[in-house]
Length: 386
Image (cartoon, rainbow, N blue to C red; front, side, top):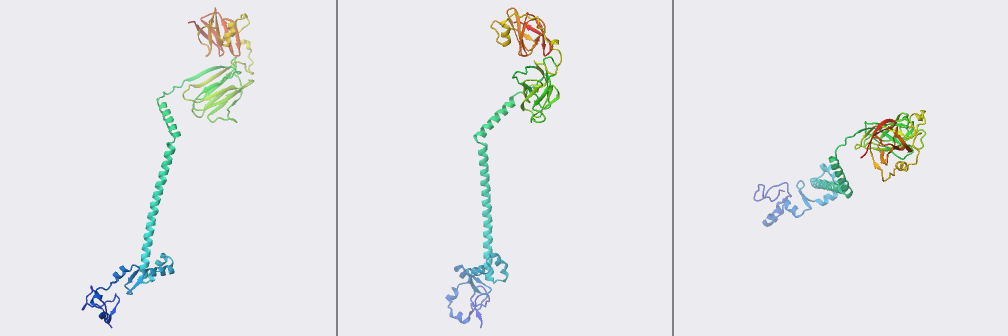
């Protein structure tokens, strides 16, 4: 039997073409179709368009249901990946279904990756915005704004502040061990200070101990060493620091307090001699060898002496200008005499004298110059009346 089918593309004889790739019809069947049926017959493509779940297998020349094949393949292979592994042994229809499933899976994965990237970028952007908001909130809090303004103000003030020219001090300080006066020392890094203690006769006054020290009570910013029995060496380890301490003298009833700083806007102490009003227990020098002989002083009761010594100066006292006495000394003219209130000791021309601790009051006949013991050094003192 000769099988024929209708075709509008291939060469034909009397409208009849011999084909192999389409379903074949017998001549008897073709003869039974009228011309209208042949013209309006559906092609495989037209049939597939009208039936989306049905496709055409050109190898077998049959139509197949894609959904049915998908169900059968998933039931047999479970996953698309397993289907791809066995695709070579499948029919063309099954391969077409697997190809569509693989393309759909690939498209889905690409979309998922794209969505993940988008979500990651959004999350990263949101995190960056949150971090910037938090940073802005911290930086622009009222406390930080106030602190920045204070820092800017201090910076501007520092720019306009003139540099301090440190003076180098070598000084002597009269000191009463029974007082509450604190000795102040200022130095800088690489600018050490030596403190020496002397009694009222000029002999060294021994130091038993001091705080801070280099053994059990250390200071972070200063080293306090004792190179000799009556000396302390103070070395700054950092600038702009401060520390308080005590010096315990031999035989003293109470320690000597001191306050050490390393400030740039203060003078630098290189050598400081502490002149104590008492006598060191180690000093065996006779006191009479340096003391002012008060045995021939006037013993009359002068109320002005007590007033000057206590610091309650009478209204009729006229201040005098003196040059050569220690800081804090005072001189007045009361009546026919000069009165001195000082820590120095008048050597000559003493009419009357009184003392409290290391503070003296002297009454003398008016002169232009006098000689005092200033820190155990005989010094000429000039007096001027206004």
